[in-house]
Image (cartoon, rainbow, N blue to C red; front, side, top):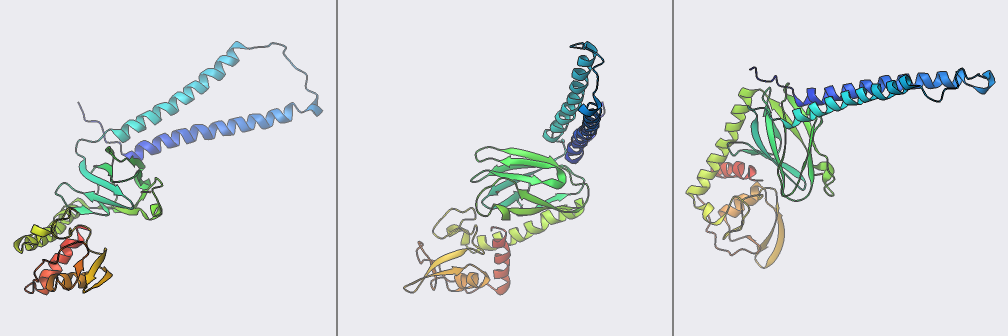
Length: 301
Ligand code: CUA
């Protein structure tokens, strides 16, 4: 038995669309022309005389029932087949986890790497498993004709294959709050070899940062998954606004690279609100080390 040829989501949806559009177009034309003719022919001024007094015609009635039924049946068939193609995942599809929240996307690949843009290899089907961390969102990529709700408490999915390299818009298509319209990112379709390299490359950054943090005991007090331990979590640290206690004063600061340097070299000068001032300074971290940590923390955003 030959394996079924791969029908992409784009082909499936486009076929159904053009069939329905074509049938509708021909019907519109036919009905409009008939209507114009009848208006003209049976205008009162022409005083048409009825040619028949019959009150029904079985063949005519059968025809206008059978032909539309066949047309509607054809439209249903293409729609149904298209729908099945969207739901039937090719065996070789690469699984990617797609997580939505107000108001961003997070994609997690098989090896644990994450990104806020969706990277996919060209020519290879991918299956995106969709979840939501808060409210309803909707994963929508017009270029691949896929749209699926992300529902809190359940997992949904889409699959597609990018046949050409490029950058494709990815929208949230479900109103999810004030920043709904900025919940937009892209699908980056890159050649398979480049994709494999990309997958490993950032892992090296994660490895280096994690190893450094581990060797210096940082992870004893700082989690990477958002839970509070003795100190605040590393997750979401970079770029966030922190409330700190500086001397007696409370202040808000932006957690940028300079903040990170201060927090490592002189941790007792600025204490994050709600945490004890127990972190020792780490003067031995070189600028390179701090860069390594920063690159790693960027991946934990
Ligand atoms: Cu998420 Cu709209």
